[in-house]
Length: 155
Length: 284
Image 1 (tube, rainbow over the protein chains, first blue to last red):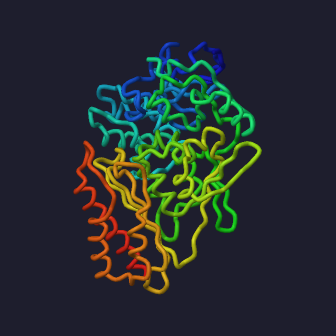
Image 2 (cartoon, helix red, strand yellow):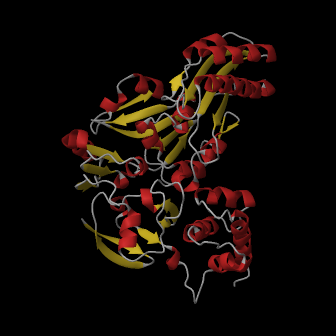
Image 3 (cartoon, rainbow over the protein chains, first blue to last red):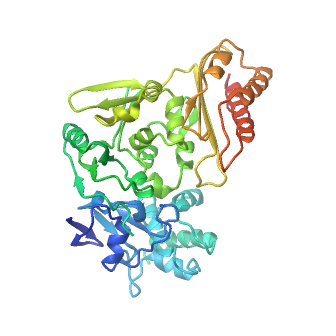
């Protein structure tokens, strides 16, 4: 089947199989910043935002989100112009092997959009689906707290 | 990795009538898709037709005079964010909902999908059955609202071949009701090894009526009728709770699977019953 999606603000048309998951469609079309791992929705490496909501793209059928707005980690900032969350993750040592980072950053992005001043408990609940095999959770929480400061300070 | 190799048709009906017609036409090779998690995580090669409910606008939570209607495609996160049943007769249902799976999956798991799948490890089914939820079934031209207990007692999988779940309906109970739920998991994001929900109606400190549901037994959630009958007419006292915990351990219908033995499950069930009833005692 053929259908349109809006990915990182750009309207795109893709041809895909009716039974294909969104993760595969994205990676096949060059969005390799979306990582694939468990294919069961349990690790969060494949997190994307669909209509602003974090979802595991490995268990989301592409056909189900036809026409919707999809955001990958490249959609919120770049190496030259990183989003404060990306900057905070780099500065606070929240990136180790980096495999979980795109998903964790996007989850944090969605959290701060809805709740600009989350408690540590709120951050933990939001991140509970983004596993970090390097176990860098403390750094991720610190990075998100730092990102809040950066955003509030307009940096 | 193409997960659903057999799928060749996707439909986006605009009405329930249309969805039911597509479902009937597709017979056993058609599936209604709510959140889509189950079919993507556990692909079935026999499925040819997917019927997405995206355009039916069934993600809502409506409150009206103590009655809460939850649209079938409402996700767990949407239900939490609605605040409609965060507290149910003094008990924090929000805490139970937030402990299910992970944020990513709570953003995808739908209430209607959980009821339709009736997976053995479902916390949602145990929760809804214990608080005596009702399910609104629509076949397009006809709708019927029945208690979840009745729905599961019948051949609900057959029913869902020619109708869809439109809503789950909850009625907030009076101040004489108490509700509590416990779940046992090995880690925060794992499926439960056992769960239990208890709703009691009190007359003073005596149990007038009770509903007890146990899930992840490891079989599907089940009403513990013997326990419900046992509690009726008994005073809620520390001594009686101790005796009831032993009764639960001896009589609960649980079994062994790779993750837990029957004996351990039975013991935990007794502990759960004691914990939940003791929490009511503090409020009597």
